Each structure stands twice: as structure tokens, then as C-alpha cells.
Image (tube, rainbow, N blue to C red; front, side, top):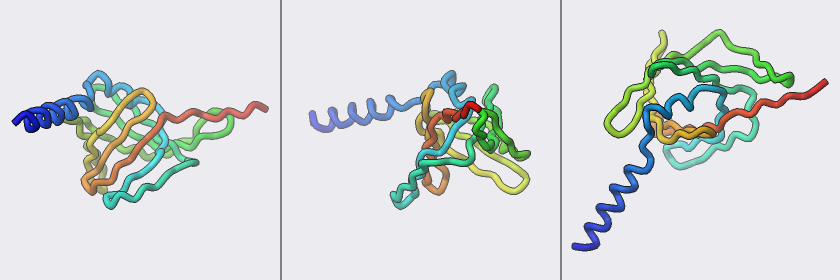
Length: 139
């Protein structure tokens, strides 16, 4: 009986430790690059160099994500396309709901801190992002 109680407490503590607070969602604002993708079969694809970066802007649980292209002078070229989203606070997690004229999809926010975040989509593919640090080459 004691083993079951200890196991139950362990599961409860494990479930509570990764809860993201709503006020932490503001950490999503800014420039992010993909660090790695973990496919549903467990295969991992590492991204050592990224030519595109995601710019995320969030306000009041709504926002957009846009692809930008960093340049060596510290500036960015931007695409004209933006993916608009809303964030829904579920009981135990946050869902990022994207919708455009071509499709809709959902990503579950798994982890978030000032330097990284991860999301998992409905196909069980996990994307791990790290905060982008711009490269500036002085002339």
C-alpha cells in the first residue's frame, strides 16, 4: 500500500512541476529559432544553423508568428505572411490554435522559459525552440 501512495505522490508532483503560468506566456514574444524536432517515432532532427527565424508577437492571448531572415548587419528581412493564433487555457496546459485560409492546426505548449520553449502538435511531433541571438558583423 505504501508503494502505491508514494507512486501517486510522485505522479502528482511530476504533473505539477511543468505547469506554465498565464503570465509567463509573455516570454513567447521575440525571435526564436528551431533547435530540434522530435518526430513521433522518436527520431530527432537537430538544427545547427537556421536561415529563418520565427518572430512571435503575443498580446492578450492572441498573436502572430512570422518568418524573418536575419542579416549580418543585425537587421531582418521579413516575409509578408503571418500565421495568426489564439492561446486557449485548458485545465492542465495551453493550446496554441492557428487558423489561416488554407488550414487549421493546434500545438500544445509543453515548456516555456526565457531562453526556450517547446510545442507538440496533433501528430505528436515536438518542436524545441531556443531564443535567437542575432549576429552582427561590424564593417
